[in-house]
Image (cartoon, rainbow, N blue to C red; front, side):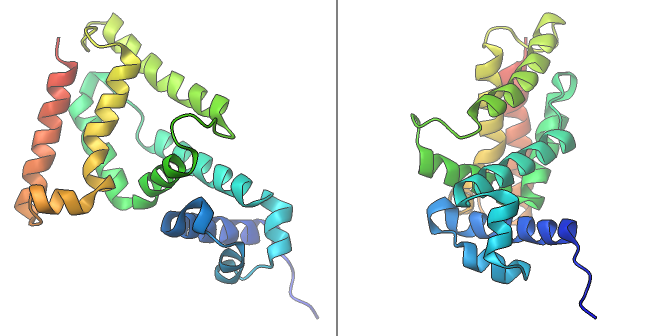
Length: 194
């Protein structure tokens, strides 16, 4: 008797393998055959479930971005805590920033992303949260909210994007990590201060 197929379990294995493959090798360097081998699935199933490699990457990145948004919503009433939670999330899930970095290398500054409209909507909601904070007077209105969000994300994420620079400039000991986190929180606090 043949083993029962579980399409959802297969999709989940493919997805997990794709996250790891794209985080490791980027869009151009990723290989569907490696994803299939790691997921214990055949290549045809990957194409049937997710489309071509670029479509699979878009779906992978979209899902990890959604997971991040749900896990760490922007909180204009407590920016320092939000920054801490964002840094914690990226330490626990380094693949998210790696995927974004690979996307930037692949598409650059001018090529439109396959899901750009959806991504803009995703960020519009975050910007609206900061706009609300500005309207209530808990966040400065000296910086436009979309620029402020970009700056806060950059300050929080840069150490995770270039860990070698963090080690060279800041140090690699636990005390160095904590000092940098305190500095990032202080920088964020000053960015939003009225």
